Each structure stands twice: as structure tokens, then as C-alpha cells.
Image 1 (cartoon, rainbow, N blue to C red):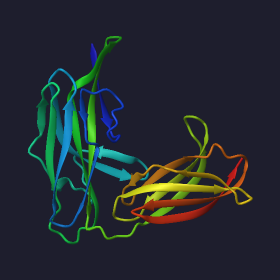
Image 2 (cartoon, rainbow, N blue to C red):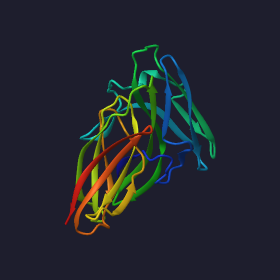
Image 3 (tube, one colour):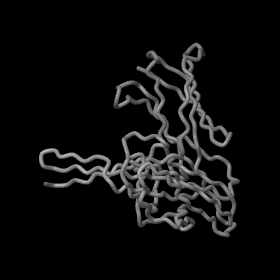
Image 4 (cartoon, rainbow, N blue to C red):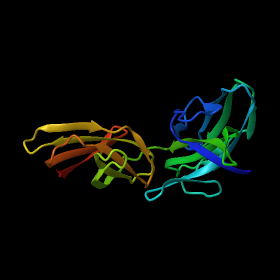
Amino acid sequence: MKLIATTIICFLFSLQVIHSNVVIINGLTHSFSGVSGQTFQGQIILANTSNEEQRVTFELNEAIYNCDQGRVFIADANHKNSSTAWFTSAVNSKVLAPKERFTYKYSITIPEDNTLNGSYWTTLMVNVDKPIKEEVVANIGLDTKIRYAVRLLTDVNINEEVLLDFESVNLNLNPINNKKQLDINVLNQSGFIENVKLSLEIYDSFGTKVLDTKTKRAKVFPEVCRNYSLDISGLKEGVYQCIVIADSRDEYIGTNISLEVE
């Protein structure tokens, strides 16, 4: 019988979208902000929800972001914003007893370098060794394992203004429900990770506001763009004037666009 091993990586913050015997209690993004030479103590809280022992292992990966591919994880690569060398922990693996809750402790030390300025990051992969699902289909064994990607983000010597730009605005159809949506691509030109929210106001030809909507905040990494989609399926055919505002760190960048809905 053939065995196919499938690994599922979880990125969603604290949201367990599939059943796992081991869960992370305190979120999949940990953020720090400080100055050169400062050390931070962090922890990741794991819980074994099963009645069996569960072995977990820990390893660092680099998360590479770009506008074309979005995000990829690479174990042995490096990039200018990597904080992997700043990370230390005494634990590489742990066997969790049934129903045990375990606190994985780590530290991040910013080097004594006053020229450092910007956001730096690494990704801690938490691997649950025991499969969460085993089944046999047509003599093929399916062995599904889970892998959590915990983002560790560090802002260093933050003093730079927000530099966001609107790369493109396009009217498209949602590929799932076929509804009209406005896709707005935002580029982060600063050296810091920005937690960006978009606001959209739409006015008809009489100057009446017909739509006022917002997106959820999402992180945009340095020199990387991110797409935001806003549902405008309720608009009738016509020409509209739109105000788009991006905000991060209480700073606001806006643009006006003309929109024709057919």
C-alpha cells in the first residue's frame, strides 16, 4: 500500500480551521518593538487536546515576501530583513503528555547596531509529528500532518513615516460568487511592516454617498504589495466617484478614482 504524507500549514491567527490534536493558544503572530541591544522574552503556549502523547518539533524558516508570489517559506535562505540570528531557545522538541499545556519560551535580541532601522522577521515552524488523520482510499494511505507557522515580527528604532502607494485599482468579478468587487493593490514603500486598513466611499452623479465600506487590517511587508478586495455588488450601472483611504499608525493616504459600473 502506498503512503502519501500531506502537511497542512496553518497561518490564520488563533483560528483552528481543521482538527488537530495540538493547538496553539496564544496566536500565530507575535510582535515586538524596541531599540538596538534590547532583548525580548516571548512564549508560545501549546495544548495537547488528545488522550495520547504528542511529539512536537520546532525549527526556524525564512518567510520571503514579494508582489508576484506573495509569501514562500524557505528553510536555508536569507534576506536583509531576517531576524533568525536574533532568536534563541533551549527547546528543539517536546513530547506533550495527554491534556498537557506547555509553554515554549524563546528570546529575541536586537544587535547592538544603531544603524538598524525597520521591520525584521523570522518564522517558527511548529511541527506536530503524529498524523491528525489516517485513512485508506483504494490501497493508498493518506497521512495528514499539521504544521503551524508562527510569525515573529520585530520593529527596530521605529522613526520612519508611513509610505504607502496605490499600485492599481481594478473592477473584477469575485471568482467564488461572481459578484463585482474592487481590487486595490497597495505597495508599502517604507522599511517597516504596516498594518493597513482601507476605507472606501462611493458617490453617485448627484453627490450622494451610496456606499461606505472598510476592509479588515492586514499586514503589508516592506517593499511588498498586498491586494484588498471590497464588495461593490450592490451598485447599479453608472459612473461613480470614489475616495479610497489607507491608514496605518494613525497616518492616512488617500486617492480619488472614477468608477464606471456596467
